[in-house]
Image 1 (tube, rainbow, N blue to C red):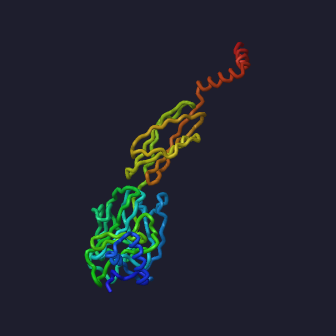
Image 2: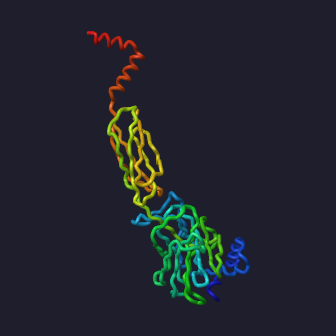
Image 3: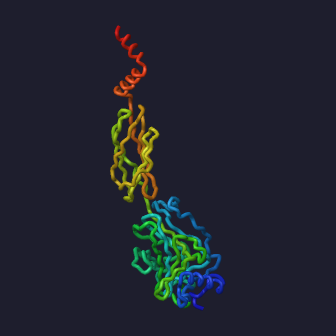
Length: 341
């Protein structure tokens, strides 16, 4: 029996499930039989894994390159979709960050070592042009997680993109590549599996292949602060703040004026753009202005500090004295009596 009709579980039950999924997406009867290219493997080859949090605020740090996971789907059955001459496979996803630097796919080889290259690409449309493309020789593809690295490129947040795997050989009983997947349950809600057979892409909504997408990011530089080092309380003072981001990401400022007043993540501003903020201290004393910045990935800089002194000034003292006299006229009479002598 050809490999492209091997079932993941019991043949009758599994094919029935896949046909139900296909019917739900209005795939015509003639093409239903094509959505069968999936291979079962031995249980002892499966690496247990669980899906992790993919929310924007909970990124996972990966290595010293300042590389982080954005989207991922790591659940799978002991099976995978065929990638060969007769069938290509794609997994759709939606990034939550505007930059992609690397992709990992969990793959295995079925029936031996294939004699053809594995072609991986990222596309905006299933049948569109490649944004990036990476080709791996049979000796470079391992049973497990495979890295596909490329130059960072910009993407649109929450837009659908496609991870596509293709092969130009592998027929009959030839060794082929397979992409680990969870066939049912829809473990990744932001995308699905797509199968290409006979010049047509088919959706398999309940299935998701195993993948991870990454982005690189570096923390912004500590901001600079400039302005007067002293002033009068009750009088507005201007201060300039400037910071840059190594990745040229937009930045937000957090400013603590030292008197209990805080400006909480104002922005965004372009990297390297100088801003001016005005503040008034209402009481005399010594204060420390503290400021830091974060980029659009929520990575923060170190704190910058700027000391300032607000002494009691003569004008303010005279105003206070006049208020006392206005409120207590007897004080003025006492001073006249004292200084008369």
